Length: 265
Image (tube, rainbow, N blue to C red; front, top):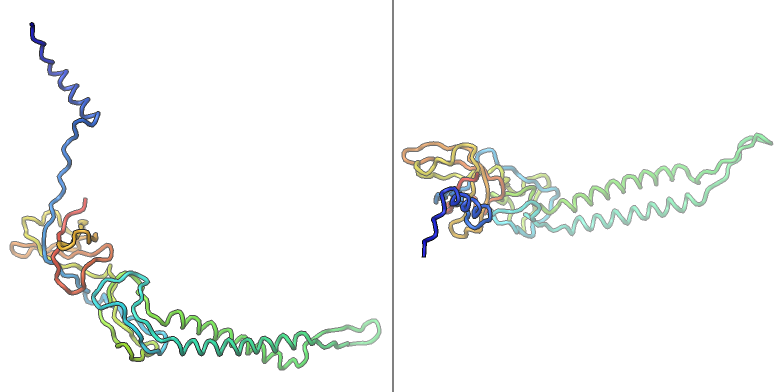
């Protein structure tokens, strides 16, 4: 039997292109940049810390946020005993209600005063005891202002994280009485921290200043955050990197941690 002729080169090329288009043969995946393992230290640079102050003089009842551990914006940092404020608020409300009740009673008992004679006579209605009504109006205004102030103090008395970040240190222990307008703790926002590390010079090519990076835990690779290289400084056979986080790191502030750093393209 005569053998079948081999397909020509153009036919083979067309068949290969058809296979690629149909997904039968996938092109090789682009190589991902290899990660570099390193010991990294998250620090709060000088000038990055801020003091968060107490809004009222109240006893500290709990410190749920441990120093150097990451916290999310809105998390409770310091709990205080607000029973004193609640008592003051109840008393102000009681006084306000009493003032408003008296004002209502006097307003409903209007006196009639007629001025003039004959067809030119006019009639006016006015609350009795005009001086007392003025006092009641002033008392009501003052009580409402005090009520709003106490409600604000009650809401702001517990201290919450103003942003993603870290408690650097607490300034009051549980049981101590925090002083109004005095610092309660020292805080640093995550975006103001810096990750310091060194990598071998021959593996640092992708980590130029401004480059985006992905930092993952070597202990738990699911823990990841993104950042950007702030500076890359050659030091002998290594390159010292300073990385500014773009989001809250999983790291403990001030504790060296093994991580894998890779470039983000």
